[in-house]
Length: 242
Ligand SMILES: C[S@@+](CC[C@H](N)C(=O)[O-])C[C@H]1O[C@@H](n2cnc3c(N)ncnc32)[C@H](O)[C@@H]1O
Image (cartoon, rainbow, N blue to C red; front, side):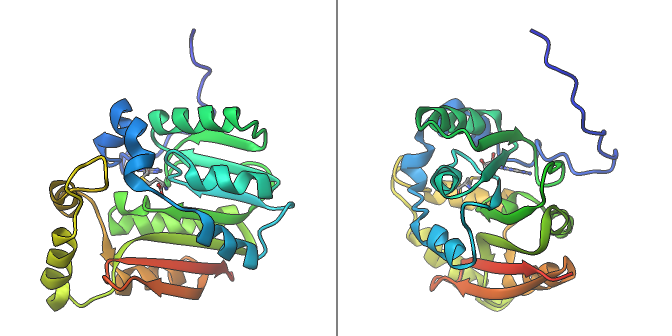
């Protein structure tokens, strides 16, 4: 059957090709089938935090780079509407099957990227993104954050966590080597040294001291910043203030 025409306007020719930067593993059905076991995401703390920030039965939440949807699936019973956005149809297929199995009728899946998702309906109250923004180079992260601010209502919340290094350039080798030393032995159990090395070489983790000004530039006020002891991960709860 022919797919319906895509109603979205074409992106400018100079735009980043998000599919080409999305990480080929995210399109591999075997990788997707093993993702939850590998990633072992526990949404409890993030959900509790968003509830403290007002997430409730009237809320619309957009999860950007939702993957197999551990967070979106857990959030849906608490919200009015959840939109799970991902560039990978394989990831979204797994998410949709699980949402249907749980009878979640308020969760929709949209195949799109940070730079192409066009939000429709009431502005979002919450945007959530975990471990996905590193797919974009910094120039594009800044533009993605501006797009996120546009889809949120004034006072809406962005909750973003990723590999953001909270160290100086001089400390990078030590921080990264310690991370690699703690890598999983087997890919079923987590990310192996080879996978982490590939991440560093081919993807776009950045520094907290580069990312935080991008948040401010995109009209966010940072209400809470959390840095991991490893100094490799950071999470931000931000409010759209302009
Ligand atoms: C490491 S997974 C994280 C999934 C989930 N958020 C989690 O915390 O487990 C990264 C996800 O980002 C998606 N992704 C990659 N590039 C993207 C883009 N430009 N826009 C939206 N999603 C993207 C991938 O398909 C993948 O599902």
